[in-house]
Length: 320
Image (cartoon, rainbow, N blue to C red; front, side, top):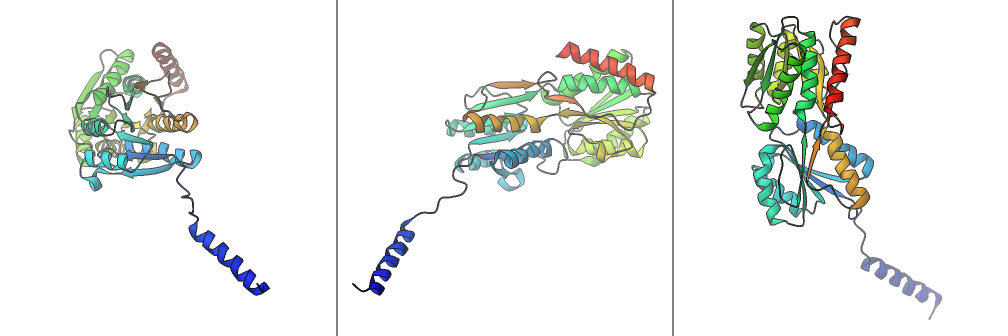
């Protein structure tokens, strides 16, 4: 065989070998995480956005792949959870108590799939439940509110009368009453997490009745409350994330619900061990699940600030 033919023969072998080899999928060995967002979806400037920030951090630091779905696309929670399970996600997250029934229906169909629900408790073996002690963080918010209130009249706006939202109200009231047992306390529920105009309207009504510190756990309705508080020159307390930047002249602090940390920790544990925590995880002050954002936009004297610090530390020590 001539040298030229030998070269062509070897080249043909190389080409045929290359055609037979499969290129490895670059994402095949990566952890895949799916999330069905809460009813408000991304852009709620609170619950969903904060949870998603934890997933993005896990993507960037733990090299995981994120798939997310919103109710506007799937039309139902059940369809969304089923799609995420069929797409071979290692963990499927459900954000919010409103999707619990649908999640449990899908979890029964996929017994080997690992699911995590936030803000609800399920007894299914393949669903890990994460809840927060919102009442503990809200007690601290109530202490702050009663301390800065000049009228000794404060208000709470809730989204719906569900246990998770009622924990915010309960803690806020209890914290305020630690400072002043006779403080005037207004409560109203919007029954709608999406209506910022309604939140503003309720806030305005409370302010007309001398409330000078407002607190809400009501999604977009809460954002309406913050902006109305700023417009009317009264104080407000944000929720879930640090909401100071939505109403810088009004927001004195926010009750932080560290959903981002909780989800990041679950993914980190799976990355390290191939397993996630099981059962019910309940996160409060002791577990860094809740707390207060930095204080801003108030006019307390140094003596008043020192007194507030003592009250907050006392309350924290009793709850931890």
